[in-house]
Image (cartoon, rainbow, N blue to C red; front, side, top):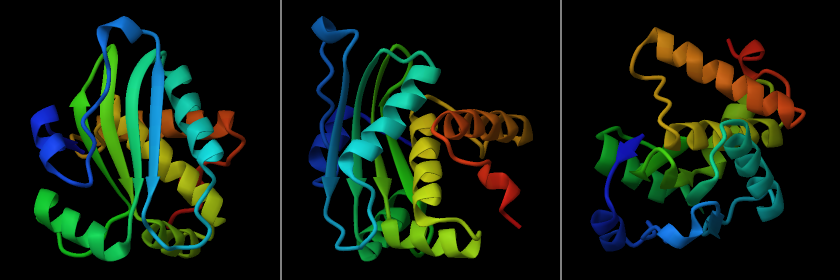
Length: 175
């Protein structure tokens, strides 16, 4: 989870400048951009359903969320730049606004997500749903890296959303 602001977002070519405006206080805007050539990427309709379910369960009525699905080399570059970690990761979340007017980007790497699906003996769609929900929860302020209590709180929130979507508890499958 990376806190940033609209000015920084506007300067970064892969991030969007959020479009929330005070007149649309009960609007959900989801923008999806896919630049990865990976196969088995969920449809935009499916991605939006996952996000809207997470927002509804957590009573978020106003949001501007960007979903970026990018290549492995690009994710490795972003992970190094923003988190100082080498190699790609499954998701990076960039928060512009928290609270009532949620705004941010969730950046996903499908090849990492697909590798993790194999590793955890999950269907790729199940792992993708989990990681999209995970990223959305980060936008809402959940932070599993803060402490064990917050990690457990976030896990429970993920499980609740995934159950509503018809997916099993992913933590039962992980080693």
